[in-house]
Length: 246
Image: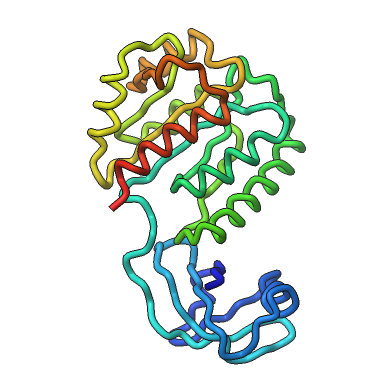
Protein backbone atom coordinates (compact mmCIF):
# COMPACT_ATOMS: atom_id res chain seq x y z
CA UNK A 1 0.00 0.00 0.00
CA UNK A 2 1.37 3.41 -0.97
CA UNK A 3 2.02 5.88 1.86
CA UNK A 4 1.77 9.70 1.77
CA UNK A 5 2.16 12.61 4.19
CA UNK A 6 -0.31 15.47 4.62
CA UNK A 7 -0.64 18.46 6.93
CA UNK A 8 -2.88 17.90 9.99
CA UNK A 9 -5.35 20.44 8.55
CA UNK A 10 -5.86 18.19 5.51
CA UNK A 11 -7.41 15.49 7.70
CA UNK A 12 -10.99 16.76 7.95
CA UNK A 13 -13.24 14.37 9.83
CA UNK A 14 -13.85 11.36 7.58
CA UNK A 15 -12.25 13.11 4.58
CA UNK A 16 -8.56 13.47 3.75
CA UNK A 17 -7.46 16.04 1.17
CA UNK A 18 -4.23 15.42 -0.73
CA UNK A 19 -2.64 18.40 -2.48
CA UNK A 20 0.70 19.47 -3.95
CA UNK A 21 3.16 17.25 -5.82
CA UNK A 22 1.52 14.04 -4.55
CA UNK A 23 -1.54 14.74 -6.73
CA UNK A 24 0.51 14.38 -9.92
CA UNK A 25 2.40 11.41 -8.47
CA UNK A 26 -0.80 9.53 -7.63
CA UNK A 27 -2.52 10.35 -10.91
CA UNK A 28 0.21 10.23 -13.52
CA UNK A 29 3.08 8.23 -12.05
CA UNK A 30 1.31 5.57 -9.99
CA UNK A 31 -1.80 5.78 -12.20
CA UNK A 32 -4.06 4.99 -9.29
CA UNK A 33 -7.83 5.01 -9.74
CA UNK A 34 -10.81 5.99 -7.54
CA UNK A 35 -11.55 3.18 -5.11
CA UNK A 36 -7.91 2.23 -4.55
CA UNK A 37 -6.60 2.37 -0.98
CA UNK A 38 -3.66 4.36 0.38
CA UNK A 39 -2.18 5.12 3.80
CA UNK A 40 -1.66 8.67 5.04
CA UNK A 41 0.20 10.17 8.00
CA UNK A 42 0.25 13.76 9.23
CA UNK A 43 3.95 13.62 10.18
CA UNK A 44 3.28 14.47 13.82
CA UNK A 45 1.24 11.97 15.81
CA UNK A 46 2.67 8.74 14.34
CA UNK A 47 -0.80 7.46 13.40
CA UNK A 48 -1.53 5.82 10.06
CA UNK A 49 -4.78 6.81 8.37
CA UNK A 50 -6.11 4.20 5.94
CA UNK A 51 -8.37 5.65 3.26
CA UNK A 52 -9.67 5.18 -0.26
CA UNK A 53 -9.46 7.55 -3.21
CA UNK A 54 -12.95 9.00 -3.72
CA UNK A 55 -12.83 12.07 -5.99
CA UNK A 56 -10.37 13.60 -8.49
CA UNK A 57 -9.82 17.32 -9.01
CA UNK A 58 -7.10 19.13 -10.94
CA UNK A 59 -5.33 20.36 -7.81
CA UNK A 60 -6.41 17.87 -5.16
CA UNK A 61 -7.57 14.35 -4.41
CA UNK A 62 -10.32 13.67 -1.87
CA UNK A 63 -10.15 10.41 0.07
CA UNK A 64 -12.62 8.68 2.38
CA UNK A 65 -11.17 7.68 5.76
CA UNK A 66 -11.71 3.99 6.60
CA UNK A 67 -9.87 3.56 9.90
CA UNK A 68 -6.90 4.82 11.91
CA UNK A 69 -4.03 2.57 12.95
CA UNK A 70 -3.20 3.98 16.37
CA UNK A 71 -0.08 2.07 17.42
CA UNK A 72 2.14 3.46 14.67
CA UNK A 73 5.66 2.35 13.78
CA UNK A 74 7.84 4.76 15.72
CA UNK A 75 10.49 3.74 18.24
CA UNK A 76 9.69 4.11 21.93
CA UNK A 77 12.41 6.78 22.33
CA UNK A 78 13.37 9.82 20.28
CA UNK A 79 16.84 9.37 18.78
CA UNK A 80 18.83 12.50 17.90
CA UNK A 81 21.73 11.94 15.48
CA UNK A 82 24.42 14.64 15.66
CA UNK A 83 26.37 13.99 12.46
CA UNK A 84 29.71 15.64 11.73
CA UNK A 85 29.61 17.04 8.20
CA UNK A 86 31.08 14.41 5.84
CA UNK A 87 32.64 14.89 2.42
CA UNK A 88 30.90 14.59 -0.95
CA UNK A 89 27.31 13.31 -0.90
CA UNK A 90 27.74 10.97 2.08
CA UNK A 91 25.28 13.04 4.12
CA UNK A 92 22.49 12.05 1.76
CA UNK A 93 23.13 8.35 2.36
CA UNK A 94 23.41 8.91 6.12
CA UNK A 95 20.07 10.74 6.22
CA UNK A 96 18.31 8.10 4.13
CA UNK A 97 19.50 5.19 6.26
CA UNK A 98 19.09 6.98 9.58
CA UNK A 99 15.44 7.72 8.74
CA UNK A 100 14.88 4.06 7.84
CA UNK A 101 16.38 3.05 11.20
CA UNK A 102 13.98 5.26 13.17
CA UNK A 103 15.90 8.44 13.96
CA UNK A 104 13.78 11.36 15.22
CA UNK A 105 16.03 14.29 14.28
CA UNK A 106 19.32 14.72 12.44
CA UNK A 107 21.59 17.61 13.37
CA UNK A 108 24.47 18.35 10.96
CA UNK A 109 27.51 19.45 12.99
CA UNK A 110 30.37 21.64 11.76
CA UNK A 111 33.06 20.14 13.98
CA UNK A 112 36.73 21.17 14.01
CA UNK A 113 38.02 18.42 11.70
CA UNK A 114 35.12 18.51 9.24
CA UNK A 115 36.55 19.11 5.77
CA UNK A 116 33.25 20.45 4.42
CA UNK A 117 32.58 24.14 5.13
CA UNK A 118 29.16 25.49 4.21
CA UNK A 119 28.38 29.18 3.87
CA UNK A 120 24.83 30.40 4.60
CA UNK A 121 23.68 30.09 0.96
CA UNK A 122 25.08 26.57 0.48
CA UNK A 123 23.76 25.46 3.86
CA UNK A 124 20.23 26.61 2.98
CA UNK A 125 20.25 24.77 -0.34
CA UNK A 126 21.70 21.62 1.26
CA UNK A 127 19.06 21.72 4.00
CA UNK A 128 16.23 21.76 1.45
CA UNK A 129 17.78 18.80 -0.37
CA UNK A 130 18.41 16.87 2.87
CA UNK A 131 14.85 17.41 4.10
CA UNK A 132 13.47 16.12 0.80
CA UNK A 133 15.60 12.98 1.17
CA UNK A 134 14.29 12.51 4.72
CA UNK A 135 10.69 12.79 3.48
CA UNK A 136 11.26 10.29 0.67
CA UNK A 137 12.90 7.83 3.09
CA UNK A 138 10.04 8.29 5.57
CA UNK A 139 7.51 7.45 2.85
CA UNK A 140 9.47 4.42 1.68
CA UNK A 141 9.88 3.00 5.19
CA UNK A 142 6.29 3.87 6.16
CA UNK A 143 7.30 6.12 9.04
CA UNK A 144 4.60 7.90 11.01
CA UNK A 145 6.61 11.13 11.07
CA UNK A 146 9.05 12.94 8.81
CA UNK A 147 12.29 13.33 10.79
CA UNK A 148 13.47 16.93 10.92
CA UNK A 149 16.87 17.91 9.52
CA UNK A 150 18.05 20.84 11.63
CA UNK A 151 20.23 23.71 10.47
CA UNK A 152 23.98 23.13 10.67
CA UNK A 153 25.28 23.74 14.20
CA UNK A 154 28.73 24.32 15.61
CA UNK A 155 29.98 21.60 17.97
CA UNK A 156 29.34 23.88 20.95
CA UNK A 157 25.77 24.56 19.79
CA UNK A 158 25.20 20.84 19.21
CA UNK A 159 26.38 19.97 22.72
CA UNK A 160 24.00 22.55 24.18
CA UNK A 161 21.12 21.28 22.03
CA UNK A 162 21.73 17.71 23.22
CA UNK A 163 20.69 18.69 26.75
CA UNK A 164 17.18 17.50 25.78
CA UNK A 165 18.45 13.90 25.85
CA UNK A 166 18.78 11.70 28.91
CA UNK A 167 21.24 9.28 27.31
CA UNK A 168 24.14 10.85 25.40
CA UNK A 169 27.02 8.98 23.76
CA UNK A 170 29.90 9.87 21.48
CA UNK A 171 31.79 7.01 19.81
CA UNK A 172 35.52 7.75 20.10
CA UNK A 173 38.46 5.70 18.87
CA UNK A 174 40.38 6.13 22.14
CA UNK A 175 37.49 4.99 24.34
CA UNK A 176 37.84 1.53 25.85
CA UNK A 177 35.53 -1.10 27.25
CA UNK A 178 32.82 -2.60 25.04
CA UNK A 179 31.01 -3.75 28.18
CA UNK A 180 30.33 -0.10 29.05
CA UNK A 181 28.91 0.53 25.57
CA UNK A 182 26.61 -2.49 25.94
CA UNK A 183 25.58 -1.37 29.42
CA UNK A 184 24.59 2.12 28.25
CA UNK A 185 22.57 0.94 25.24
CA UNK A 186 20.86 -1.92 27.08
CA UNK A 187 19.97 0.53 29.85
CA UNK A 188 17.97 2.87 27.57
CA UNK A 189 14.39 2.88 28.81
CA UNK A 190 11.40 3.50 26.51
CA UNK A 191 10.63 7.20 26.41
CA UNK A 192 14.18 8.33 27.18
CA UNK A 193 15.53 10.66 24.47
CA UNK A 194 18.93 9.54 23.16
CA UNK A 195 21.67 11.69 21.59
CA UNK A 196 24.32 10.06 19.38
CA UNK A 197 27.33 12.10 18.23
CA UNK A 198 29.22 10.89 15.15
CA UNK A 199 32.42 12.55 13.99
CA UNK A 200 33.37 13.47 10.40
CA UNK A 201 36.12 11.67 8.46
CA UNK A 202 38.83 13.09 10.71
CA UNK A 203 37.01 12.24 13.92
CA UNK A 204 36.53 14.59 16.85
CA UNK A 205 39.30 16.80 18.23
CA UNK A 206 40.43 16.13 21.79
CA UNK A 207 39.03 19.46 22.99
CA UNK A 208 35.62 18.52 21.52
CA UNK A 209 35.63 15.22 23.40
CA UNK A 210 36.54 17.12 26.55
CA UNK A 211 33.68 19.58 25.98
CA UNK A 212 31.29 16.68 25.40
CA UNK A 213 32.37 14.92 28.59
CA UNK A 214 31.87 18.08 30.62
CA UNK A 215 28.28 18.18 29.29
CA UNK A 216 27.62 14.58 30.35
CA UNK A 217 28.12 13.00 26.93
CA UNK A 218 29.93 9.70 27.43
CA UNK A 219 32.67 8.49 25.04
CA UNK A 220 32.10 4.88 24.01
CA UNK A 221 33.84 2.33 21.81
CA UNK A 222 32.23 0.55 18.87
CA UNK A 223 34.80 -2.23 18.87
CA UNK A 224 38.33 -2.86 17.69
CA UNK A 225 37.76 -1.70 14.11
CA UNK A 226 37.64 1.90 12.91
CA UNK A 227 34.33 2.63 11.18
CA UNK A 228 33.80 5.23 8.48
CA UNK A 229 31.60 8.18 9.41
CA UNK A 230 28.79 6.87 7.18
CA UNK A 231 29.01 3.47 8.91
CA UNK A 232 29.43 4.45 12.56
CA UNK A 233 26.05 6.14 12.94
CA UNK A 234 24.25 3.29 11.22
CA UNK A 235 25.94 0.79 13.54
CA UNK A 236 24.84 2.65 16.67
CA UNK A 237 21.31 3.32 15.40
CA UNK A 238 20.86 -0.33 14.42
CA UNK A 239 21.75 -1.54 17.90
CA UNK A 240 19.51 1.05 19.58
CA UNK A 241 16.63 0.17 17.22
CA UNK A 242 17.03 -3.52 18.01
CA UNK A 243 16.97 -2.74 21.73
CA UNK A 244 13.90 -0.47 21.56
CA UNK A 245 11.82 -2.34 18.98
CA UNK A 246 8.60 -3.59 20.55
